[in-house]
Length: 321
Length: 233
Image (cartoon, rainbow over all chains, first blue to last red):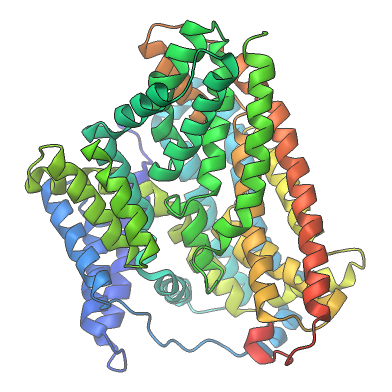
């Protein structure tokens, strides 16, 4: 039986929202770059609505079009009116803590949904695509919460789409940056970039010393994650190229400890790179930060401190247990 | 060695502040070309990975309609009112409490919070309001620093709690890696050895949030032109 709820439903919903932004931009006569902006969101809508149907090469050229529009500064946010602070304060006064309920409903649905999934017997899963369970639970929670929010605020039904498109336009082209970086990571992997990095590290360092092997592995995870923007992509390359041959085979370290802590070393890299756009750059846009790298800068001291401790923990544990 | 040219393109492109999307795509195209792929093959890879990774934008795009609607009706202002009544609240403590909850929840496999779900609508405004209640009007750079640290609290809580739970993507990925090599590696070992670093990560957050609170106090005391209106939000 085919899964009843798949993540494709949510992709279609999102695609419809991007299409709405495209149409609204095209109809907006005051918009400085209405056609470029409309085309960008229209192309993005196409990749979400028809992503599974179109051949990958066609999607690739659509992506190229979006990149060109962004690079030529043809994608801009609309000049939407938002209520003044005084109006929002009056509304906050009127609605009080009822404003929190929809926002709290999302984590609540996540808790209940996750627990239900864990305790239901396997047969019940057939109507739900389990791989994507977290995303689906989040999506259902968001829809439910939006419905409750509409009731609480008494806003018109189109309001969520309008407000959502306003915030998405504030993020702008940075919204597709995470996907682009994932694609770059894929191309690096296909081209064998990681192998080159691993070979360089093993040739350059005296890895017969156990501590150097650990430092090379953790450092490799950190640096390669910073290049790829993704610790998962770095893991296979650096563990295969440095970790297994040096720590496990040469020095007989414990592979479970090596892998677990190696991944955490990679996460320290994720904290320090603008390449991890969905964690570092998109949130900066979402929080209206002037400096797109402000989140990375705040995280550098945190990451370096955790990395050092993690390296020492690995050195003390990996050859002993 | 020539294959590393993509990394160079990214570094130079970021340094010269070219459009990030353009830099990323150029790096991919150059790397593909020097590795012997045709332009069409490179476009095919971009298309394939772009579609496969559509899930990355899903949480944000699904949350913004709700967040936008609630914000329009005063969610941030209400959060600020609440936090002003809590006398002991500081920006650092608000963020730290959130990091603790985030980290513990994800360590038992429950994903709550997120940048769009919690940081923008609740945590950042509450942290700002706590600092505002303590120190009065804040300079814009201080407000920006508080927001950036709220995002950092989310990331640290998320990353360093996650690996303690065995059914999480990272652990399954590592297990898949070892399975493919025919090595039998215990998932429990990987998960349990994540705990010391998880504790260290939280300790580091405690330190950084103290630094943040001290920085807010210092910057708020500096003589300056008082920010007004939207800038002081």
